[in-house]
Length: 172
Length: 219
Figure 1 (cartoon, rainbow over the protein chains, first blue to last red):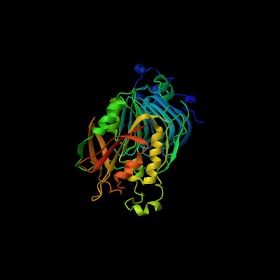
Figure 2 (figure 1 turned 90 degrees about the horizontal axis):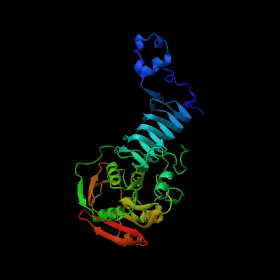
Figure 3 (figure 1 turned 120 degrees about the vertical axis):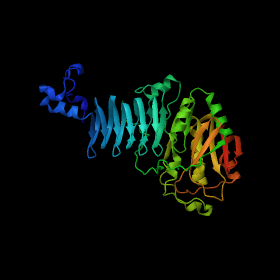
Figure 4 (figure 1 turned 135 degrees about the horizontal axis):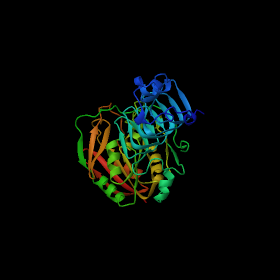
């Protein structure tokens, strides 16, 4: 399983923001490809031909145009599922924009936006939700519960019943 | 975070999404006492759960959530009105009509919802399917739960698909879509009565726009 958590994060060993110098004037970073790459692009991109299975975590904005199965967590950053993105995962991020397809629950600290070509099958937990005309969405919307709090826990606190605890099938 | 719940089946089909901006310029607003009654009745319950089976309308979701409802969305109409649907206007051929390929399985726990908004979903399915669907909806409704459905009685003019937007507690906006006209089934009053025979009929009214609103309660 590819776990980004295990990878070395070049930012962690960097100097604090206040002491950073511009790339051109800082000889220490001029020859560091990691830092150069980070500085040049603010949003990481997973391309169309990439297929990832496992847990995906990160500390920067991310656009996914490929396929991801597992879980995606970008706590304080913006996650964009691009038009070619095909995701089977639970998503956790500060902001989530869906232009492609997602199958899984979506939790955002700030907002979830489903664009007109976006398709989401799963539950949304976010304080703000915007769904464009033409988008496909199947699931529940919870704008009260804190992102990250499980539905079961929230429902038990409310003395409610989990919506899909016992499945009932009606074949049409 | 746990794994993806099993009830989430893969997205394997074309969703028949209505193009953005596909609305005509003449939306009409009609009063809806049944919507008002449903919202007021359910609004008195603690954290009422509402299931919306109609066309996805984010305005409605926002509106309902800010009124204190917990909303689940399951857009059956868009699925049903995908272009591959066979015509439903010839009732004699009803038996020959295969099950719509885009229909899936309703997967909710029994007694999950206080209310269900069906809008005009039943117009797009044949009687037998309507009976099966309604049986499922009855099961997922809580006792005394309410169900609101609309039936189109306009036989003369083919109606475009309609998007329903809640304008106020008792006001509904009908927004015809410019998408191709989709065949609908026109029910007889007797058929509607039969369909909801297991429910308690709270109100059934015929509107000027040739729509019948039906509000029923699970017994």
